[in-house]
Image (cartoon, rainbow, N blue to C red):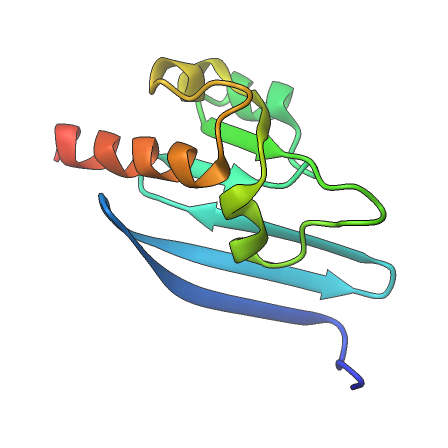
Length: 114
């Protein structure tokens, strides 16, 4: 199957603590994906945490491998978080937890501050 590139897919994703937006972006020899909530983003390793932290953003990242890249938002759900900005850590997100758990914490933060 030939996939036309570049390609962006956006999808609504339902979680226990609410709804988030999943995104996948692909181009020749590259891709990245993320799950965006009102409080922040769970994404792949393409995100620069130093810059995000400087701007006060809650970002948690998981890292794929060349053999198993993170391509679609669903790939982030079972992937392990490897790093997070101080703002994401303040929400309770920790390296080693699943991407799904990190999204749930971000969604819970939305309800706590709404």
